[in-house]
Image 1 (tube, helix red, strand yellow):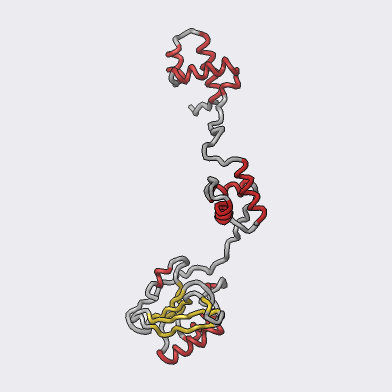
Image 2 (cartoon, rainbow, N blue to C red; image 1 turned 30 degrees about the horizontal axis):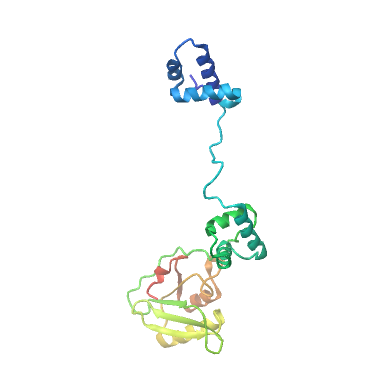
Length: 251
């Protein structure tokens, strides 16, 4: 025998009809339909007040939210956002707090939800990243087994010039092989530094780096011009997993 499909509203209507016939006690009717007497009286009262429409489920969402922002506050937030289309909720909140420090402004997350509802949020485009490297790291048990390479973050020198410090270390002995200030972070500037280090210390078996340029690219296998040069020189490029700087923690 298959399952019998029933509708909640139909069951409630049958319950009301059975209760109004008074052929059995109200408690017995409730037991037969599997509801408590409190629930049974509730459906009877709704049917008497609203008829069959009262037997439908009602929305449980609150009509008023205690943490909702007022229309005046919301309009002020939207006004600042429209005047500065590139500002996000954090910057808008900082501006409002600076202009009116005594006003109880909502949290940045609440302002962000307001912007979403009004269609003022521009979704970020996902940046294409280098494909992750699945090859395991080579063993590092002696000098020149693995070198580590990375840029340490640019800064402006005293004369206002941009400086990109490139560092190269031996992963086994942690000796600093190179710390070179470069004008740009591209293959044309990095390769001469590597070539000079190779001539002075010899070739390592592998070169470990992150997934940034010029060590990797979004091309096939994540190879870049620099990594191709390394392979041709007999050095195996290694790349850490994206967002895992601890994998190159020695450097």
